[in-house]
Length: 293
Ligand SMILES: Nc1ncnc2c1ncn2[C@@H]1O[C@H](COP(=O)(O)OP(=O)(O)OP(=O)(O)O)[C@@H](O)[C@H]1O
Image (cartoon, rainbow, N blue to C red):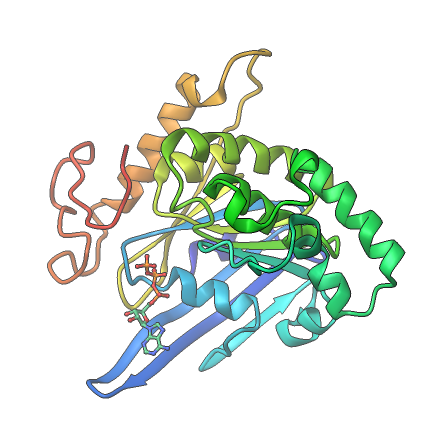
């Protein structure tokens, strides 16, 4: 049984993944990327997926996004099959590469989904201006992607993902390519944008501190075949104005809990995956591909 089945489901969760298995066939044989994965994400909740490289985080996100279909099991978004939710433009997607169109300005990139779905010109321009303002790039609205820093490009990608007022944002390592300072600013920005929009977020990351800082819950996955190993609720205490939550003792305690969950004693097969450091002391991680600062 998945650890998530213990939590009481709300009437219309943003995401409900039930007993999902995803197998791939390749020249070298069959790969079981996900096995018996169940997960519920409440409306408005921020959930991060973390786990060793190849454990199926992106595969799970792609299934939720209806970019792929499970071999067995079901994926529902707001109580509807994922493909129905996608057709209803229920969610926005931002991946590691900002994926902006180089020949379109910031404003025109943000407008793109609205244009594709037939929103009249004046309405889409107004919405794009609001979003560009929300991400603090109004002075750059007429710039082209190559005139922006990596962090700015990522902000544009997030604004574009928000264009259709999605109730669910799916993000796959959106800050992975950014330097540390920009990344921290973007994390703060994302929390602000999310609190203004009320969207649920499913966020894939390799960084334990990033997952803890952003999330209400951190889903720790085991190495292939990917399963939900455990789900760590994050305490997120209120901190006084001017204090960064990343400097709070509760933050460090939660980081340690996620780290211990990743390297816990219940590792099924520690010798064959990227959690080769599973037997090492929890605070001396040796996980390849993980950012364990
Ligand atoms: N289209 C595909 N065909 C064959 N195998 C695939 C395909 N997509 C993913 N896989 C395999 O499924 C497993 C899970 O891949 P996935 O990209 O979901 O992992 P991940 O946890 O996101 O990895 P990373 O952290 O390195 O990005 C891997 O072994 C991968 O090689």
